[in-house]
Image (tube, rainbow, N blue to C red; front, top):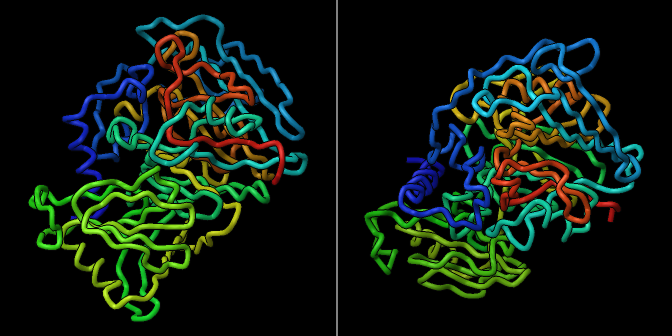
Length: 453
């Protein structure tokens, strides 16, 4: 059984026995976030949908959005947020939807908010924020306000209700200022958004990763399985305090100070290293507070022996990560590089590439999109949904919208109740789908800062 599958099954098991914390789901809405509604995720609940998966129209000569009937009225309002940054509000359709027809109506309405960033004119930068740490969740509006950003949207898929202890943990790639803080999954549905904040360039790629720890003195190596994800204690050894006596395979996980105020506690082995990679302390139980310059390795099951053996002869270790993108192109980690996890490409090379599918993930939902135009402009967009005032889009309709907006390459980010866009004072620009517009707590956000530094 692969390590990634083990992690997924463990989270899926949590879904069946742990209640949903109220703070994590302020709308009581499973949305299209994390494990609860991604068909590639082990905890996916294929909730029956009334949607007949409406087919988007062909591109329209007048430039209007190719969703719904051709005779629908469409209005667009532009607002400058900062030099080179424009907010466009698009409203298509004028009559509220029948609540029973939200998933199938061709009359809309749809409310789409689009932020366009022109790198040639913009004086700021686009990057991500996880808030105080990876493990916790915050509202998008909180992340925007606390960072004094001009505008921002929600971003990655995250564990959400699957792990109430660490609900903000990304389900896939996470890169923060050139540091790999969450590894990509092996799921075919994962598609990643990479941002170079120093040049305001964006790309959509399928990122793959391998990692290892190497002892500098002995040259011994140990493969890494995860980064900043709680390791799973093998079920056969769940009550075994001394995990070195366990004969079942466990996990080997790297933890950085980004994760939380403390690394996960429990049975297993943990070794803490200083900024040079030299051992600070070794413990036969897990759970430590790391300084900003430290990192830790945790192991469970029989993998604890391999971890202890790696440093038994002393010495220091190096962390080695190999990241590749499309066609196996190497991705170098460098200052100013950020990355978040999405599900499915929407457009590639100017063509719509949304795959066919069924189930709630492919049906009409609120959506968050990110992409770049052929001439390098960056775009963030939200589509409100599950409301009579904006019905949302199927995955196919979302691809059509991205294409019509001019996104040459684009990706579907976390949506559903997570979809949110806010301005610098924390005021919401869109209307989330939670009860009475309640905003969900999310794992991270894409933020546009007013300056480059």
